[in-house]
Length: 464
Image 1 (cartoon, one colour):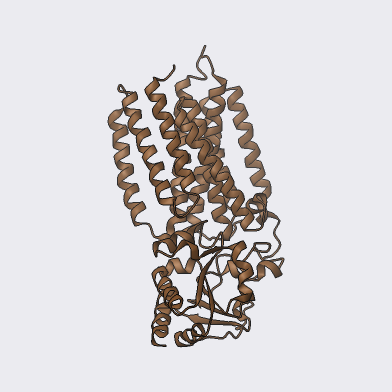
Image 2: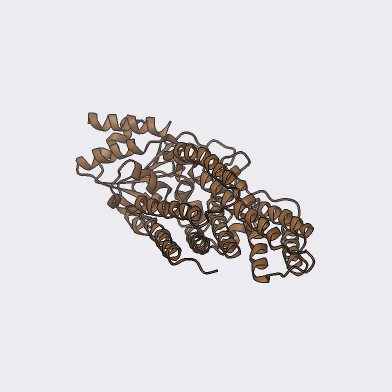
């Protein structure tokens, strides 16, 4: 059945909105408008669906589901803290994959496969099987990443006894069940496939830990996009195919970029824990001396600097100190000091985390320096202020082959003349390993809550 011309035109308009919205998300200056354009397209698509199908069944249930979703989603999105944004992305992503899988299961029964004399559309059946598998993996995998990032379970890799064998067995069994469902469709085989796919999502994410978890979120996001595109084929909905393909492509590219930023392949990210040797310990168990300072000491150090670089990290987001660091940067700039921010691609818990955080404080975009651009500048920098970052400045990424972050490109903070490290305690970063930068001669530590410490430094700078 060919859609009316007006509906085809609307589909084209919505598809353009999705593409422009995704394009807008590629830069901090256009991200907000891109988000609004994409949201507008989604609203139009939902409204037009009701207009194009006036005799829609179960309308009260559909509207009720939308209302419940709004009542849950809007407060959750508005109230989420910046530090919890990655786990919310994981949660919403999982819901999308689960919804696609459920729709395909419903369509499986609508096809009437398995009934005597039923005509089977094998193309639609194959898309249904694909959606059930990929959507279910995205669902359980995303829920598990949420639990890890929320620290409801350990963030470290969980390797079960005979983990590679069990994971491989589940993967093979899932593939066999999928082929079996295509050859001899039945409700029993569908249930077996669903259970195996849900289990596969768990087995896929369990051995992933530390800073690799956000990469898995991006990969599962791509899975959700592909499952949505396949469900669009099953339903004959062009917009679902377009939107799902865009999400799948964007998620795949982002996964590759994040893996590259971590200095490893996607396969090593997913399965590295199976072959990893003993990781570097979080500490030696011995207390090692570190140099500490006061806010007044740091203010004097900054007073005599001509160039300062600020390295933001997850701790800055936790302390909600972005406004305070902006105030300090403005004070230093007024004194004629060159100030910029060194941004690592995976600082925080997801790409762009620090960019969004600093944008909240209206930090000028031109002051943000990416990894490749800023690394040559550290050697000529008088003072580097590290606020809440740890793994992305840890020299172990270059020097310790046993470290879980070995091979990851880092910010070359150790090349600077002086380093001020703001920390709440000597607790290691997300990767769980000790940071040798803390013990170098040019490093001094300022202990305490980042916001309180920066406020004291600001006050001390004003008094000079």
